[in-house]
Image (cartoon, rainbow, N blue to C red):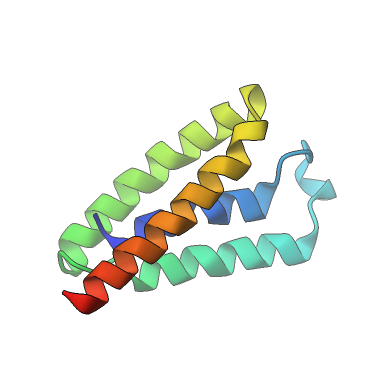
Length: 101
């Protein structure tokens, strides 16, 4: 799996949070930080499959993760933090395995 996919969920969590329901109430610094994390995930899309295949996987995963994030944020907001933590752990584990292999 491309390394950048693991940063998509935490970036959505950073951008939208759990309690804000209107985009005007979301802190602008959080929005910019989330966008920066999405751009950071774009830097890692070429690992390990190359740019074209990695971008396809990244784009497909972004659509699926965004849909799941919205649903889980509405119906099970307590699990969003757990999924964000697991996604960051997956990013670290996958990154370390790519570096050492």
